[in-house]
Length: 188
Image 1 (cartoon, rainbow, N blue to C red):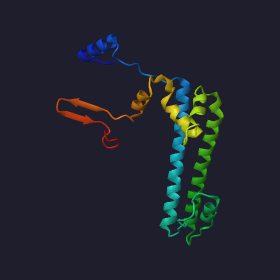
Image 2 (cartoon, one colour):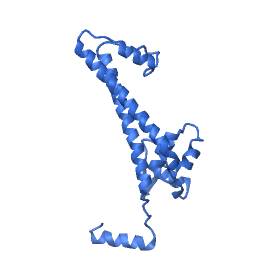
Image 3 (cartoon, helix red, strand yellow):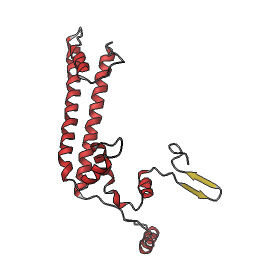
Image 4 (cartoon, one colour):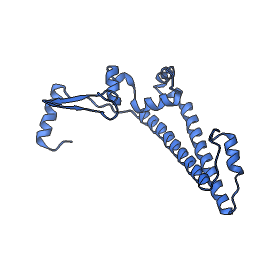
C-alpha cells in the first residue's frame, strides 16, 4: 500500500487508464509444485556439498582417484570404502562422509520418484509432455521450468516470455545517454 499521497495519485491514474499490468498470482497447486521442485533442488545441493566434502577429505589425506575414471560409480564407491587410514578416527570420518553422500543421493532419488508419481495429476502435465519433445529437456527440467513459470499461455507472445525470463536485452535512452541492460551477459 502506497502511503505517499503523490505516488498514490499516480498509481490511481495509471490504474484508471489501464497502464498497470495485472500480477499473476500462482494458485495452491502451482505453489505446491514449486515447493516440491525447490525441495529437490535443495537436496541436489546437499548431495553436491556432501560429495565435495568427501573428495576434499580423501585428497587432504593423499588419496587420489584416477582422473581418467568416472566418479560416483559403484567402482568408485568400492574404492572409497576400501580406503584405510593409520588412525582409526579417520576411518570414522571417512565412513561418515560416505554415509552422508549415500543418504543425500537417496533423498534426491526419493523426491524425484515422488515428483514422477504426482506429475500425472498436475494440471500442467500435458505441457511437460510437450516440453520433453525438445532436445535437452527431460521431465524433471520441464517440471522445474513450469513450476517457476506457471502456465506459459499467460504470456501474449514469445517475446513477452523471453522478456520475463530476462533473455531480451533492452535499452533506455535519454538524450545523449544510452543505457544497455544486461551488458555483462548479452551485449546489445
